[in-house]
Length: 294
Image (cartoon, rainbow, N blue to C red; front, side, top):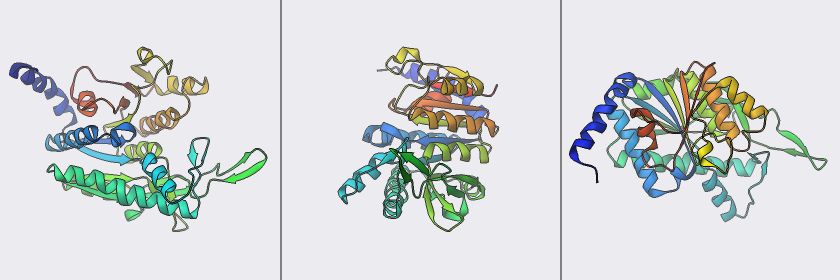
């Protein structure tokens, strides 16, 4: 147990960070284990509430892959992936939207509001806030058989006006990564990529990606190999050299998108650590990997 004096010291340590981020936008990608562990879910909601009450403006972009997989299996559909992307046919996109915009989004919003916050949920289809195009690599050759990824999208453009209106009115926007195509249809977009694009469009002060590892590791099996800080160029070199691979690639690419959109700093942090968001934002220690411009 920490003493009252130690608690006071923690608050004092946070003062310069509270001053730095006062009235600033922080975009947070929320995913991984933090979304399925009840203790971590409540801690995340409390972190958001604290930030909002402290004058900081959080915007949340969330994923929901495990929940989508669970529902697909319940209705007898086997989830299929190609190079990390979900094959999303016409029936699957309905299930994806149902889970992301109908279930996961509302659960996050309800948790924040239950604790006394003012959260409001929307998808990228609302107010044309996220316009999508069909994924450019939608047709791949797998064992000499063409595979169409279906309703998998890429970010065409972000209109941040509805998000600015929400945060200026004191709300915490919670956004599901469903984009609206020019054909009027919904497209499932990788939530990491959406989050980085939203951070850039909002001119956010900081972008934070919550994931299931400590950050970028030079050795995936060695937590002590954490890279605490690197530049966009160094991050690209690690991807090109296959030192960053798999599901970490879109997370790093989302950080690069944010930085190139003039977000000063982007972070990949371990969402399995309780209150990781506050530790990163409001303490001298910080956690995870920070990516900056060159």
